[in-house]
Length: 249
Image 1 (cartoon, rainbow, N blue to C red):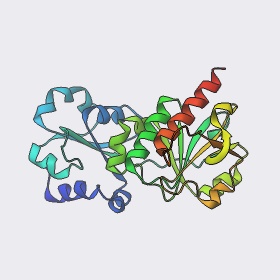
Image 2 (image 1 turned 30 degrees about the vertical axis):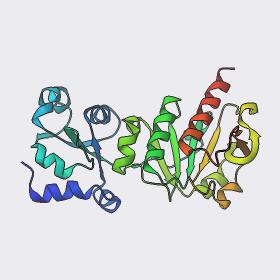
Image 3 (image 1 turned 60 degrees about the vertical axis):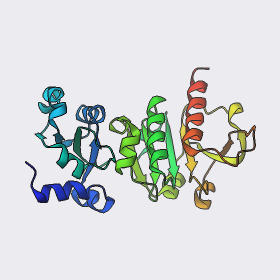
C-alpha cells in the first residue's frame, strides 16, 4: 500500500524541479520498464496492477516491486491512458565528455530542441543507426520528461545523453562539426568520413548564432517542394541514414 507521501512524491516526478530534487524519473509500460531493468540504469522501484501480475515474476526478482490498485496507478501516472506498470529510475551521473568518448564515432548534437516528441524520436533514431551519444545544449527539453521517455519507446535505456555548455564543447573539439543549415553542401554529395558531431538546431530558429560560428562544415538536405522547413527529427533521421550509407561504401 502506498502512503499519501509516497503518492505525492511519485506525482511530483512529472515536474523537472522534483525530478532533480529526488534524482528520479518515471518510466511507464511493460516493455520500457523491462528494458530499463535490464540496462545500466538503476531502477528504484516498480509499481504494477493485478492485470499484469503474471508477467511480473521475472521483473520482480531484479528490483523492488509493489502491486497497487488501478486507481492509485492513475493518480501517479503521467499518461492520459495509464499502462499497467510504472517504475521510478535513478537519474544517472554521466562522465565528462572527452576525446575517448567521441573519437572514431559519430554523435548527435542538439541545439535548443524543445519538443518532447522530437527529442524522443531523435533518441530512438540514433539508437537504430548505432549512435550511442546524444549531446544536448542546456536549454534542450529534459530527456527525463515523461513525454520524452515515452516517445523513446525504451531506447533511452541504452543511450548516453549529456547536457553541456554547447559552445564550449564545440570550441574544444578536434572532430569535424557538421551543421544542418540551409546554405550548406548537399548532404547526398557529402563524405562524412569516420567520425564527427552532427549538429541539429531548434525547431523554429535553427542553430543559434554562437553554435553556427563553430560549425566546420555546413550541410543541407536539398528541398524539392515548397515546404518551408523539415521536422528536426526527420532531418536527423536523414543525416543518420546518410552517415550509415557512407560507412558501407
